[in-house]
Image (cartoon, rainbow, N blue to C red; front, side, top):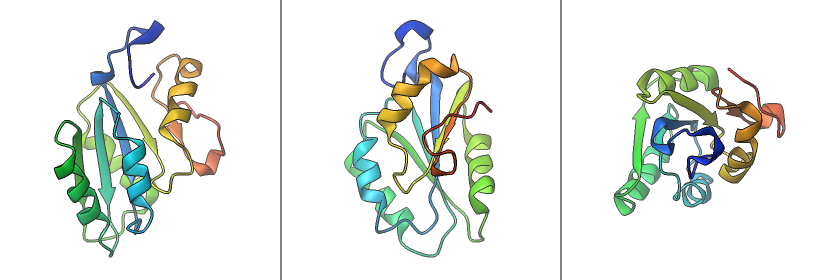
Length: 134
C-alpha cells in the first residue's frame, strides 16, 4: 500500500501519515528507523515537554530524501487534537495516522491497506490491530 501503487492505482506520493508524538523521546528512534522507507509525507505532531521534536529533527536532517515535518505545540492537544492538527496540515488526498509508540508498525499498515479500499485509515493500539475507516 504505502510503498507502491499496487492494485489501487494510488500513488504513494498521494499519502500522508500523521503521527502524534507526546513525550516519545525514548521510544521514537525505532519508529523513525521503521518508517525510513515511506515515500509519502510524514507529519509528526509534538505537544509534550521532552526532546521528541529534537530527535525527529535530527533524524530528518540525516534522511533528506524523506518528506518529514515536525509540528510543535506549546500546550497539550491530546491524541485526537494531535491527529486533527496533522490532518489539517496534510496536502495529500489520502491521510492516515499511527501511534508513535510503535504499537502498530508501518508493515501492518501496508498489509491492511487493501482491506480499506483506499479509504483514509487509522491504526493504533486502541483498536489492537484493526483498521477503522474515517
